[in-house]
Image 1 (cartoon, rainbow, N blue to C red):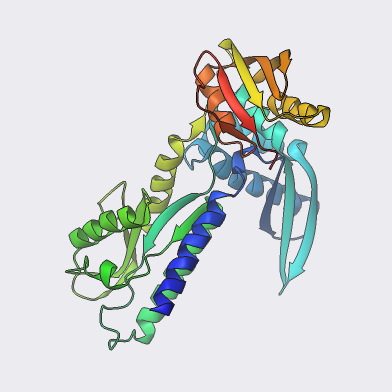
Image 2: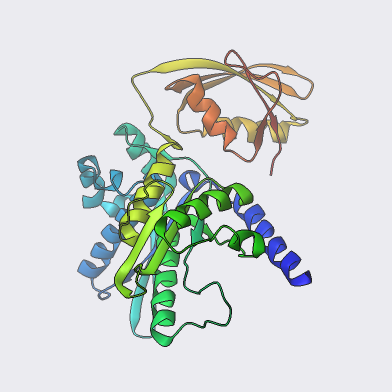
Length: 338
């Protein structure tokens, strides 16, 4: 009983850490590590391009968008967007860490009307049925090796796509859903499981077919598609779909003025921080302070796009919390200075 409570606590605690994580798309600096073939100029330049392509998958939230021809100009001149880089060697492998300038990258995306992924780390419920229901049945060597490889590949993909993997604790309540080993029951199991854990998306990967024979490569299902596919295609399609709903395309052909009121501003130092924070938003073109009423500041803010875009940006900023009474005519937030 104590062990079960401890496991549940760990799961919930992990979720709380994820919820407080920074929005990846709004970082000041993006650090991307990649392996190099050598330390010569050509190898470093190739590493810059590889790192930038990996970054585009993360910051746009889509493997498809990262292949857009509009990005070719960016890929041809990666050094223009890099502050610095450092090299290190471990076990004969040369790695480089490149530091990309966040504002420059985001400006390029907005200038070319490409999406910017604006969300914190997504959580995907993951199930790898490597062990049978009965604890008496142990995995053989082949099973264990296939499972370990699968889990390592899942971990690598989740890191590349800025995704957190959550696993069911598989207590009696979870296992009651597993009434067969068919793909249909796995889907039913996962749909019930995400409800229990308060999540929306899931992925299941199988290492054996219905006859118990080890597959050449895992077959995966997801909450997006019930049709079996390989791990990379299933995972990327799922994450692309999730991120599409949480992305912003800056439309520079449209402009709008919005009224925004910020509460919780008690001194001049905080006023400066709030003003700088608002002015730094990617869609903001101009900002005017209209009035100060005790700890409340009223701004008129000119932006690209529409009022919903500004609201979306402020909603994902941990320094601002939207207050009751906020509307399209006037957005009202409290500044928290986290």
